[in-house]
Image 1: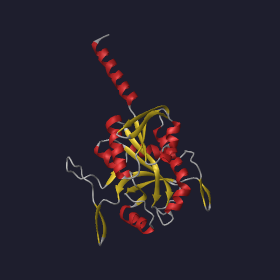
Image 2 (image 1 turned 90 degrees about the vertical axis):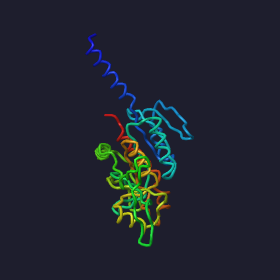
Image 3 (image 1 turned 60 degrees about the vertical axis):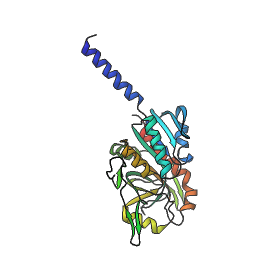
Image 4 (image 1 turned 180 degrees about the vertical axis):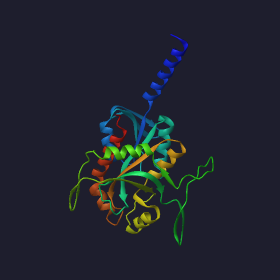
Length: 268
């Protein structure tokens, strides 16, 4: 074999090997958010790292690594760092539930994150909440106030959602196919069950949904140069009925979020 041909062969072999080893990370906060995803995986293998369980295997033709973060920003950041450090995923997708902020959305509807922001990081004074950008501790440069989800993943999520068969949502006024829209997702270490707070989040941050992990995952991925997407299905409207609605819609919301995530990561 000629030298140039040999070099070309070795290069193609290397590219093929890198591609075959690429892996997609999938995260969720609670076990119900991951049960469908894990049940659909094949060739599963557990790895415990620093008391975090990572499950590697295949899902819809993709190599994936799945992990439960636990609730809250610190838990989410720790698990994301461990996943990136040990498995080097080409992208990370989060699947889970959230409270609705956009009044046009109802429990069971889905939000594909375009941007993700903290709603509890900043200064509180008598005038209200003043939102701060986080800062990279090494470079001392400010991060974006709103972290942008990966545009290619957003496009794919929007595309596959058009023909995706989602579980219908049984509400008091009938049975509905969930709506799917893109929007801004905001994160804080509080379970929001206050209409006054949702009005603030809508006014200040133009939020569509609120939850407790997304921005921590987004910041970690941003600082580690890892593409990411946050997908949330609404379990409630983050108002005075939030706890009761969450109990009612939790399972269908978690199931539909996972269904959309599987469609996004599926190899074509």
